[in-house]
Amino acid sequence: MRRALALDIGATKLGVAVIGSDGEARGWRTVPTLRDEGPIRVVARLFDLADAVVEEQGPVDVVGVSCGGPLDPRAGLLLGPLHLPGWDRVPITDLAAQRFGRSAHLLNDASAGAWAEHRFGAARGSGSSVYLTLSSGMGGGAVVDGRLLTGASGNGGELGHVTVRHGGRRCLCGRSGCAEAYVAGTRQAARVREALAAGRTSALTADATAEDVARLAPVDDLAREVWDDAVDALRSAVVSLVNVLEPETVVLGGGLTRAGDRLLDPVRHAVAQQAMAPIARIVRVVPAALGPAVCAVGAGAWALQQEETA
Image 1 (cartoon, one colour):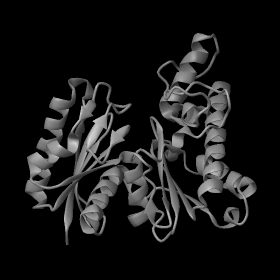
Image 2 (cartoon, rainbow, N blue to C red; image 1 turned 180 degrees about the vertical axis):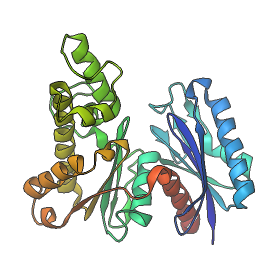
Image 3 (cartoon, rainbow, N blue to C red; image 1 turned 90 degrees about the vertical axis):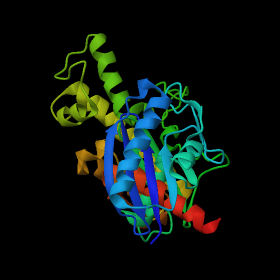
Image 4 (cartoon, rainbow, N blue to C red; image 1 turned 45 degrees about the vertical axis):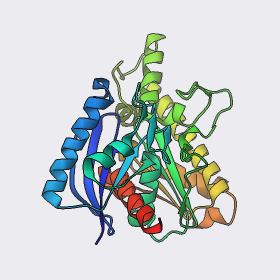
């Protein structure tokens, strides 16, 4: 069985695993990113972790790298990813190829998650699927008729930037009314801070997280307001994506899905009531299955496929 070394570069953690054609994440390990140390030191720590995993798991055939965008996957460059300020034109695939002596392939992290869940996870067996990760940000990816949608430059799949409220809250991308501006955990926390600074009373405090918002929504007015806006934005985004892409399966992952059916059921109801027929009758909205290594699984599986089709 051919195997890939998968490297996942996140805002708060670096992850490494060896991925086989079965999608299993062997030797999965993580360390803190410490992104403010800059790309040279962070990449060195990532590669040291990868060395340890390879020593434990044995040789690999190719390297797959997962990171948030913007990227240039064809050139293997990180182009100042939003979660890695100052990381401009980092030649990550060249660095990986030199270190490990194998060809390397770069993929957007949310696209990697979409590919992993489609191939091995909650969307397995679907011809088309949409994956949304709901955590500190809101990302996503889509597989249509078995093909991952990467876009003209390899940065396709920014599904968190579907507009759900024209002229709405300002998003970190610079536009207004994006789903991410309401759904992302960091944006929910920002709304709480703004409201408290404006004099609102609440059981929430200035250091509240999205998990606190979800927990207190049944009993606290401010938490309920922020939660309801987040759920409404997510429902609108998912219905639009279902209408455009007609997936059999919509997979929701990330920390916000710990709210369970309190999050999933309103989305399911909205799709059933608002999406166009006949897709509304057959699409499933389900929680992700692959856990924290999902992006590494996708990056590794993608790298293996690129080698096979080269």
